[in-house]
Image (tube, rainbow, N blue to C red; front, side, top):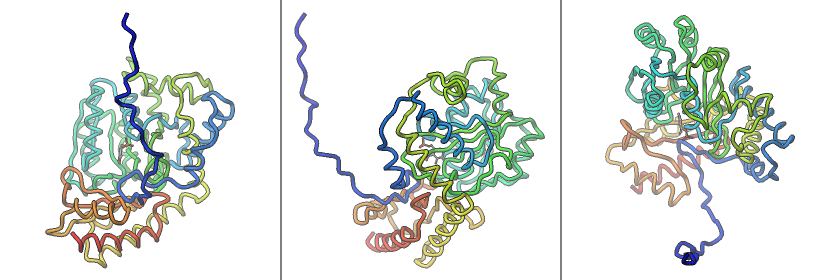
Length: 382
Ligand SMILES: Cc1ncc(COP(=O)(O)O)c(C=O)c1O
């Protein structure tokens, strides 16, 4: 056999890592809190080490606080928010289940796509991007479709609209429907009461209002959702995200399923510790106050928000791009000249809005003033 020699073609010399100090005021990720970054570099232990097992219990308990739930199946899924989204659907949807999805933005579309891949009979209810569904519309959809699951996006990151969830849980119970809510851009920044609102399943991400880097997807399943999972006729059609197996590692058995991302869990623990230290009411109020300052400041420089005041998210604001202004160019100037990241619109809102996030650690008055000043200059220069 001919000897194989090492090919050095890809052996490039790269300098030591030196990333730019961006202020991340887009739709996510937000900047991680310095204490979270510090926690991430704590000494590694094994995923079955008693110290890690104790940490897992703490993360679960702190997640229950952040979500205001007593659900025992409350865990961080390995992967980003989309992994938790997929875990929620893979475990709850059985082929042929009718799933009603509220589509008023990009992430409602993603829910439809994922649910259909797991065999759901998806029925869409739709609204223009930036609007929300009212209780009557939701009640009518439940009546018309009698779904196994109703899926709504609490905080639509593509539009900046906050979908009211209060009252939806009661409607779902009358129809024996499970209520699934995307809380990726609300957990830790926007009032959210999983148990009091009758939410049966929710998922989130770490990189938005929790101010932890992306990498874990918190998920919570209430008793009715756990019951549906236990009644499944077939195995969950996704090995990695099968909660019947994953929850044995996160439950009392602690049986190996896959290697938990150890250091990411250190980071999430610290992020959740910060939430508990501040207290939810104070944290929600801080997000509201800084968002209000942003909205007032935008108005003062002649800019308008896309979403009507009563449905605006404090964590994500969509700002209308003035006539004749090149949205992309302004965002590029902000990044290049001011080290500030914001994003443009998606789908129906592409080219029409900028998306500005004030999430977690980044929701601070000095960031609001820094952005307003830079945005005004970037628009003038465009
Ligand atoms: C509302 C919403 N749902 C789901 C996701 C998917 O999360 P990830 O990008 O972390 O996979 C996002 C990410 O921006 C989101 O904003």
